[in-house]
Every structure is written in structure tokens, then in C-alpha cells.
Image (cartoon, rainbow over all chains, first blue to last red; front, side, top):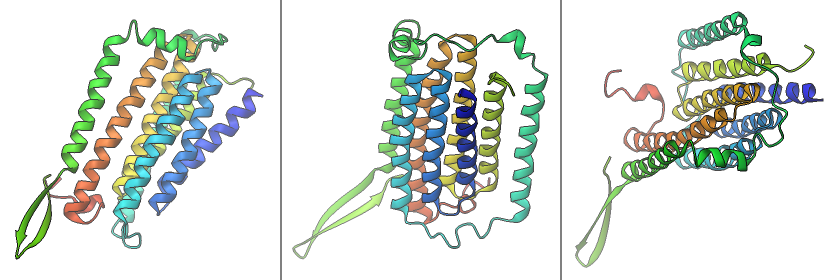
Length: 184
Length: 102
């Protein structure tokens, strides 16, 4: 049963990952990426990490995808000649390099003695719950947790600074003229 | 295969990571580049959680949670940079961004 679920979920995530990098239209890519995130979330459930599966769907499929879609829609890209200049040599070199990365991974996976390092999968039902994670996060890992908060704060400030526009208003012949100017 | 072991999860993670690498190296659209980076971060998260699960150690999950938070921050800043580039250059093709002759 778990085997069938694993096979189906891994096929979903691999296929949708391939679709993400092969679609011409960025909107299609984003929608396939949502599929991919749901497949990965299902694998987290199989591994027993229920809280992280929920976080994956809420943060990735919810927040990050909305951000991506929003930017794609806002930029209103010209799809036709966007990638015309991509040369076939560059693409094939990229594909070969990523294949070599996969070969490297396969070699290192095959030569590692996993049985000496790892035991059986956890059977504890409480392993991935919010209670377990929260008690760890707010005791042993409190300082890194706070630092992540500072990081998110800094990211928000950076985004606002990047997106800021200077608005100048002046009156000419009784008409108010507003002018927007990029700062960054 | 008789049972799902850690090999399968790590192999799946390696495959998805390689797909992400291929996306970064072959595509020119900056938004799709970012999505490929998300694929790679996700595959590393999968590997972390698989290791944690098979070691019966929940600390790997904490690390994956931090990776998710950093990825969210990274996407926010990255998309802001893409929008800024689009305002200045009217394109998000990475070949058009050659101000620093890179």
C-alpha cells in the first residue's frame, strides 16, 4: 500500500518537475509547480512528517505560488520571442551537465553503506506532529528560530526598498502633475 | 523492490535536484529559473526529512522548516529584483542583463 503510494507520488513529482522546466508559458510552469509541491507534500506524509506536509502546502502551494503568479501576470511577458535567442548548444551543454550531476549522485548513493547508518523508518505516530516540533523549536532551537524571524524581517525591508517609487507632485497652470520615478 | 527504503527517497531527491539543475542551466526566463531553484530546495528538503525519518530523529524536520523559511524570503527578494530588472530593461531574459559583463 505504502509502496504504491510512494510510486504514484514520486511519478507525479518527477513528471511535474519536468513539466515545470519544459513549458514555454510561465503560467503553465507555475501551475505544474503547484502539482509538484502537492506530490512532495504527499511524500512528507508517507515519511510521517505531517506538520511539514501542512507547512509545505500552506507556504509553498499557497503563498509562494501566489507570489509567482502575481509577478508573472503583472509583467505581461511577450511569450513569442522570449526564448528565441537560446542556442541549442547552450541547452545541450546544460542538459549534459545536469545528467553528470545525476550520475555523481547515483554513484555516491550506490557506494554509501546505508544499512550501517540508518535503521528502520519511524513508527512513532507522534514523530511529525506540531506538538513535537514546537517543543523542540522553542527549547533547543530557539535562537535559530529567532534568527529566521530577523531574516524574514530583513527580506521584507529589502523588498520594500527595491520596489519603492519616488512620487513627485507639482502644480503647473493649476493642474496637479504626479510623476513616478524608480529609486532602485 | 520489496520495501520502500531510504535509497528510494534519496534517489528521488537526486532526480528532482538534477531536473532543477537542468532548468537553471537551460532556461533563459528568470522566473522559470527561480522555479528551478525552488525545485532544488524542495528536493533537499525531501532528503533531509527522509534522513530524519529513517534515523528517528526529529531535528531534520526543524532544519527543513528553516529551509522553507529561507526559501520564502529568497523568493520574495528575488521576485522583487526581477520586477526591478523588468522596469529598467523591459525584459526578464537573463541574456539581456549584462550590465556587469558577466
